[in-house]
Amino acid sequence: MGNKTSSSVNSLLKKFGAFSLGPIISSFLGFLTVPLVTFFITPEEYGKASMFTVVQGMVSMFVYLGMDQAFIREFNNYRNNLAKLLSNAIVIPMTMAAGFTIMAIVFKDTLGVFLYGTTNEPLAVYALAVLIPFMVLESFSLLKFRMEEKGIQYSIFTILLKAWILVLTIILFMVYEKSFRSVVYAMALGEIINSIIVTILAIKPLGLNLCKYDKTLIKRMLAFGIPLIPAMMMSWTLSSMDKIMIRVECGYVELGLYAAAFKIVNILSLFQSCFTLFWTPVAYRWNEENVEKDFFNIVNRVVAIVMSIMCLGLLIVKNVVGVVLGDNFLDAINIFPFLLLYPIMYTMSESTAVGIGFSRKTYFSIVVSGVSCVVNFVLNYLLIPVWGATGAAIATGTSFIVFFWVRSIISNKIWWKFDMGFYLPLTVMLVINCCVHTFFKGYIVYVLSCVSIILVLILNYKSLKKYATYIGIPIFSRKE
Image 1 (cartoon, rainbow, N blue to C red):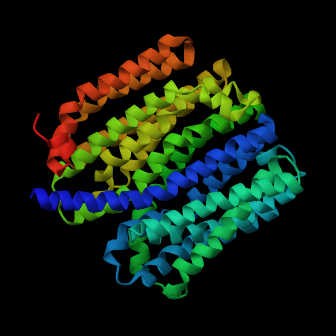
Image 2 (cartoon, rainbow, N blue to C red; image 1 turned 120 degrees about the vertical axis):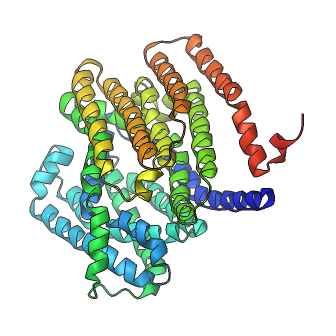
Image 3 (tube, rainbow, N blue to C red; image 1 turned 45 degrees about the vertical axis):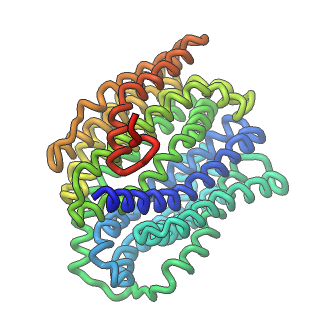
């Protein structure tokens, strides 16, 4: 069993590396974009640009109607007839996207006020309107690569998207103007260009027939996807309510600082993206093949340990945030710590909560997102008037702790009873470190994080050694 297991793990690691290539390089390009933008524009302008991203996320939540997730769920059943599956999966989102484009153009003034606080930005509104149908095409094209476990192809187009945006942002800053408009136009143009290329390569060869429906398949996909919509609405609220409430309570300047801090947190979201892209198709395949639960347990615990150490490490170097963002964004340092809990807890839940998808009981996602959303709204309402963007960060971090625990407990009940007690000390340790780094200064906060990393390694050494021995990694499995 050892050789077979070792071979299987090596294969998975290669696929993980292929899927990781895109997020790693694209995150690096995104990381380059952040100081570039914050150098040229003010926090207020950056806050306006961030609203474009917020609304794009809100629209994507509605236009898909859960059909993208249904495509993932049905993929292995239609691997030999992808044209049929994709034709039935994409027709409704494309229709919804076209409807949004028309509505956005008709109500451009209302949307302009919501986005930018004025009716005098029609081009910036049109950029969002035109972008949405291309976003849908790009999303399904990348999903096809992802479910085929074609990590290199997926990574190439993930990298290209960030590259287009970076290059276009520089060009527009140089030849157009140094404002949020250049940032918005660069994001829209970059995604449109990338969408056209990836669609030609991924979808066009299939020869889709959008006029030929399989009503039974569509009904089954909608039955899987529609229960996810309330959960996605709540998830969007969970991830975006903070920005909207900051804008209402504090204005675009505070929103700009918060959005800039969130961009830096995307360094940690890098691992989240790599893991999620790799893990979802593998987990579903393992479930279909009845792979031993021990494999899932190994993934769950290793992910928790790695993410915790990465969080603590970023807290230690948090002052680099101020250097990267520039003098106008120095206050983002105080916002940074609790925001780290968003990618940490979300990634951990991606490994522990797969049982919800396996059981097809997607309605539990409504419970998870609903509870987390209520916590998020209440804490934002209470903390933003007191601490501004820092209060919003605390609300976001706390909400995702709740998100992890509720999601994991439900999965534990309906799938497989893994040990939930393992995650309690890690959660407590992370919360203490984030609190200290938010409200205290001096060398002691860095000592605490260093000691915490050492404790995580010492307390989990035997487990890590056991897992390494199980999969045949010689550096840990050799005799002492």
